[in-house]
Amino acid sequence: MRLETLREFVVLAKCRNFSAAAQELHLSQPAMSVHISNLEKELGFKLVDRRRGAELTPAGQRFLAGVQSALASYDDAIRDCGELGRSYPPVLIKTTGNIPYLPALLERADGIPFELVEISVDSLPLLFELDKGIVDISECYDFSFSSALSADAERRGIATARVTNDRVRICLQKAHPLASRDELRREDLRGCTVAITSSKWYDFMVAQALHLLGDDLGLTFRMVPVASPLALRYIELGDALALCGINTEALTGRDDVALFDTLDGAPLELAQMVAYRADDPNPNVHALVEAFSSFC
Image 1: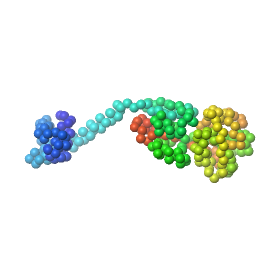
Image 2 (image 1 turned 60 degrees about the vertical axis):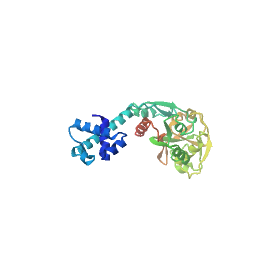
Image 3 (image 1 turned 30 degrees about the horizontal axis):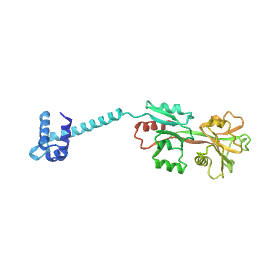
Image 4 (image 1 turned 135 degrees about the vertical axis):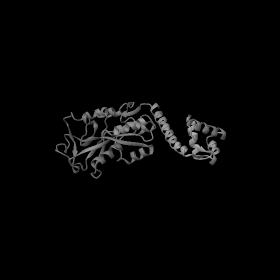
């Protein structure tokens, strides 16, 4: 029994006419008729009542339902096996090399091939490496509070998924008037200066500070550039405060710095995200994003 003949029978059942079915299948009408006759002989029962054109017999109607189900299952199996057999390149994951939870996150890859691409925070604009295909997944902070970055991501077709929350600390030099406080209140920060440690990320870091601290405190901002996260060990803030996330470890050993974990008694947190191209054709990218997003 040929698979092609079964498909011909399904088309005949739809058209209910040998000539129309043959035309749709690009066959001659006599060839079509012979194929169906041979199928009936092989089955041992009539499928079509030729006295009534090409009406299905009761047996033909029941056979049609089984054939349609079998062909659908066959086609699904071919498609599924084709997906499994297709070779996709490893997923390229951008990291800055300074993410403490990264090893635990990568354990969720569960056999999906990937490669880490270490890129300096300041080397490329956010989302550029995704847009240009340099990487497939990029770790980043939540940027939903930045209308410019959100609009840029939407324009480029880039989506995000939350991975975890990163604790943010307020860092002050011990000589700062607020450094001796047991805890900080939002109102204590009114009129304070916030240090911005990257010129390339200036607008983003300003938006981030306003998001975390409040946009009604009359905050001002000052550039205090650092060459790398490790340079926070030596940064001089003067009368400015700094917001430090994952890189806080570089500050904890300093005896001239005060760190505050809360504001108004509540922890300061930023969502850590992964960004990816929403229409990425590699299914492993979407599988990894789904695995990573279950980390939180």
